[in-house]
Length: 361
Image 1 (spheres, rainbow, N blue to C red):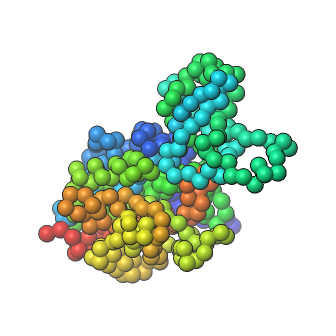
Image 2 (image 1 turned 60 degrees about the vertical axis):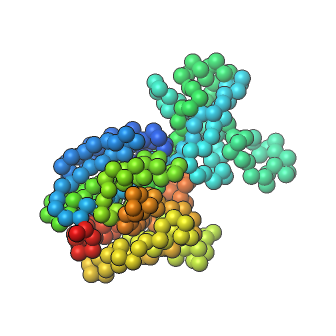
Image 3 (image 1 turned 45 degrees about the vertical axis):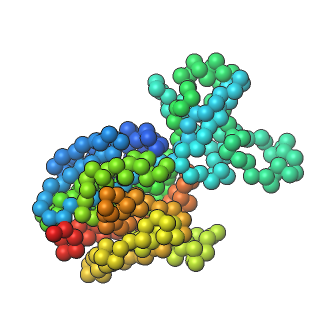
């Protein structure tokens, strides 16, 4: 007899595949925003897009105003220079580790169509011994589209400033794990969608504003302007975070594990990001405990989320983070556990239900 599939996980997997396979680097999130708009529309009362490009979807209600944010952008590149032979040099958009890029296939998104290429490298057969151990820096990398010269590149419609993303398709792995590009933070976007779906069927003592933010990877920019406009009583950023459950990282750097539930942020970036205030932290921890949910606590050394900048908006907005532990962050093969995405959504839902006890007048 076949094992019955978990409907929640199947839905999350399908959404995650669609969002992961979509393309949109910082400042060019239109494709992702259009998908989010279509998916979240049935669950909210109104949707608008602000001047920065943030998608702001509101479920009206009486009580504290709660902002739930997940960023739509992914790390990528931009065309910087084309040499006479038609090889394309590029600059980063977001934080890449150079070694993950060599020999990747990429997509150049022009005004007319997508152009495929590869980040090439010298064959090992002709490398000098010292070259074999040398890290290749992104400044020396180039993209080969098959063009014969610079004019050929121009005929393809490729221009300086065109965006570039990794050509990598989402793949489900064993034991409810899944891998793909841009799971930071499309996994958070999917969790936010799940929150909207569940809350659309319930009456809560709150007004909930779901925000798909832009330009998080290059300075948390969209969250800053969105939070100023929304001016919530409290905000939660749903994002990804670094686990310590695989080779190459020590537990003292991260005690988080995939499959062990949602991650509640205590602080990130060694306190240079956010230090979550006691009331907000107590709200999230109490919610998890009262609902007998597994959860993990994170004190992070590196990286920060939209919560850090929302927290500093106006006279200060109480902010917290509910994250999804994700292996191999900022690479083309990020890995999540679908159950953690589900857990993140469910914790956020239950927190929204009790927010009136902690925030607002």
